[in-house]
Length: 456
Ligand code: ATP
Ligand code: MG
Image (cartoon, rainbow, N blue to C red):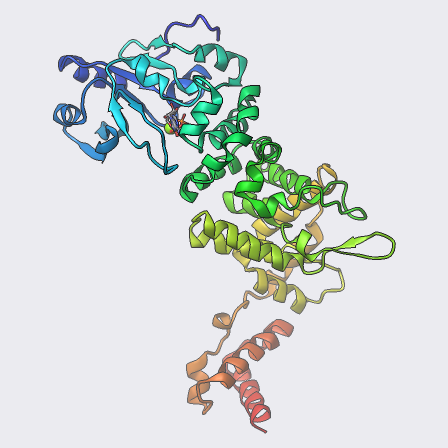
């Protein structure tokens, strides 16, 4: 790609849509991430169009239109299986609530519309249907150089919208682009503005950072600019917390390396979150012996609590929070060959069979981040083989897998209540020790004996 590029290829379906605009005497431009991604020879994630047509006019042009954000000049056009966001040319005022522009003024030219956009690489338009480039801020050149640069002065643009600093770092991680020095310099002064941004907007950018190929790019830049202290204070508290004896790195570096490893093995969002947050309880749980060796007993419990607080504040869905908290809570398991089958079953039951793979991915990430070296391929093999073996012998892992249930016990005269619950969990324990006992008759017999013991 060269900065003298004058047009980009346009998908046939967008050309068809352009004909509709043209038939109504209106212009349409592909804008934003789609143009950037096409210039980078990547598949565009979604299509955003900018037009001189007003929303009502767009609604009249197409059959299926959702009025997604009329106030901001945006509608979604459903066209041949695609959802295309169409926004009237506009210029934005400041975002004083950190959420939405206070005022939206519709503009008459694409150049004016492009000037409201955050970064030069996002302020390139391609006129439809031919794809001719409109590039008033040399975004094509910056894409070529892999450089993130603000449209206009960084400090002014960050004052208008405090999310932009985080977006800049997010794009650095996602695209593997460098950040213009002016961006790094302007972030600290805009922290007050960023503090007003809604947690949901922060979360959306944070998720994109996590899902990028190398989250540490953004996370390290967050630490360098003060964004980490503002947005994720529990992680910022880990900066400089050395842990000699076990690890080569301070807790913060260890955490971002673990997150990078989770990204490297293409783990899901939850494992990436757990990798990043698994040790945030270390500063609060730290103690030091006479030789200066530090220990962090029970840090996983504090980490789980701090991670839950952070994710709740960022409005992550409960399902995600629960999974991440569980993985963090369980991450300190320590398998030894002397474990008998019952101990392996207890481990599976505690972790949950469906979480084993993720917990092992977290452990590999944790192990990698101790020395930044690929952990041995067979790091968890002995435990994995034991699990396979134990599961092939019995799959009774919870009370509901027992050959007997509460109703059976009631029919045998054991009343519902505290004892019933206790008896069922003792029966499960019995089956962990000897799966052959998982028959109705045997468990009934043992259950009745347990009942006698409990009431004597
Ligand atoms: P992605 O691949 O993540 O969708 P994108 O560049 O399309 O990247 P969006 O958040 O979808 O990002 O925004 C679409 C376009 O809207 C951006 O390319 C940019 O031109 C503009 N934009 C989005 N958010 C802002 C903002 N906070 N300030 C200024 N312009 C913005
Ligand atoms: Mg987009």
